[in-house]
Image 1: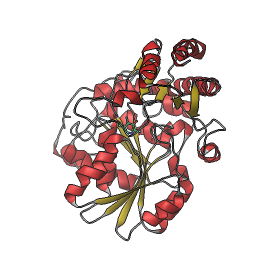
Image 2: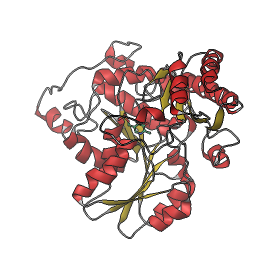
Image 3: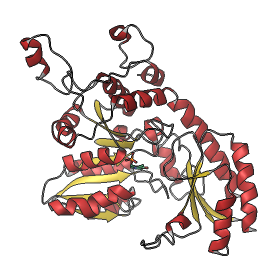
Image 4: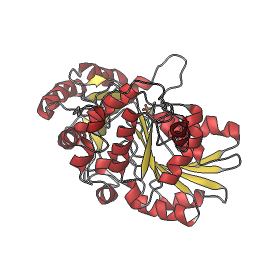
Length: 387
Ligand SMILES: *Cc1c(COP(=O)(O)O)cnc(C)c1O
């Protein structure tokens, strides 16, 4: 199906709501039945019919259809956060005694799910360097049921070879799950490489306006139904209908926003790499990137993120550089309209917390929708702090 059809029309049954162009927010917890046959019919499939909003809501259902089509999977569920989607996906594929192979630096709360939460239920894990397919294979055990990928990750952008990973896992009956938040389905379709389940923090690009926290889980009809009947309905981490309508609105401009961010980010990263105050820039589509060839093979674009190591003679100078940035906001997250800087030095000297294991001269940038020239002017003036 054409991307334009998905973003602008798919799932929208306008005749069901007064021919309104924009879908209404069906802000209702429950749905009424005219008689007993209708009541009984609804309960044959709580995921498809309208019974109760923890299960299915018409506004949320429109969003689910669009997201499944974007990922090229049969079905999709949306959650109240990306972390809820990650947790539901992983938990659905393990039982006590099972083992998970996971890339070594996944999103922070994914790491805590595997290293602190699941061990309470006797589910073990091995973290491996996902850039090394042989290391992934060596980590697989007879009781491994999940291979968890994040390609690229959102700080150093390490990739995994998705085709090779899917092949290794399939041969052993292992379920592959990928966090595809970085690339979005526009720039990378993991299901096309044979990956079973795709999760997103839709908080980032899919909503795209820094005003909703949302998670997405895509997969086959069978896998999604299993998650629905278990983790989704019992944990109840659902997306409210109003938030779903905001995400539907965000999707209208997904293609425009991503193309803008991704073009600007590559332009700025290319410029930054040439500045004398910069040691190294990490961006998968820069020819200097270690896994450039693999990035070009399995992604058609990169979005707005890149990271840079700066040559700063002291922590104080690094702090001055950060404080001089005016057109970048200092904040976590990414994928919205606004450009951001996330300095690792902010994870040093936090009372009651050990210092970050990352070097303090690293900054992760997110390029939003502003004029790239205007952003480069800001970087150029701030860089003078490092001269
Ligand atoms: C933000 C993020 C998450 C968590 O998503 P939330 O919507 O914040 O719960 C998971 N994975 C990646 C790569 C992220 O950037």
